[in-house]
Image (cartoon, rainbow, N blue to C red; front, side):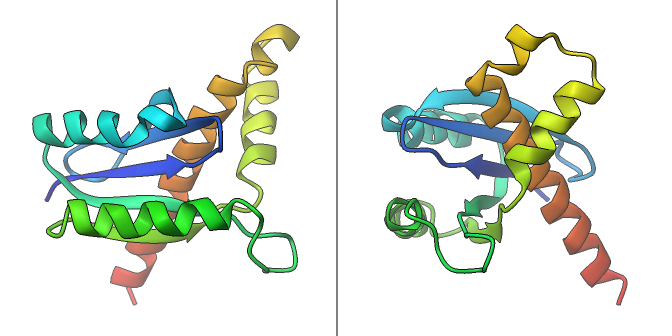
Length: 142
């Protein structure tokens, strides 16, 4: 069982989270410039055993694809080609930014820290990963 990587894709910055090898705990890994994302993933996957890549699926509140989807779908296709042995999954990312901001408030982060978009992106990726792992566990117990 390898790690799970979650990606909160943005046109400028992308948040990345990763699970532990047992896929129990999610943690923020990094925020990278989006143009460096695939290089970063290649280096990380060369060092660590990764079994799943979860990419946040950008949807509007009504369930329709958001503008960012036109960038995400080609990324997913490239990931499938580059890592054929790794499962690549699109996963609903609605509300993750709002939940990330709430987590920052609840965690007592000061206003300046809450304005740090890179931190929000990394927390959002962590939320995507936690939700994905919870849904997988729920499916396994059915």
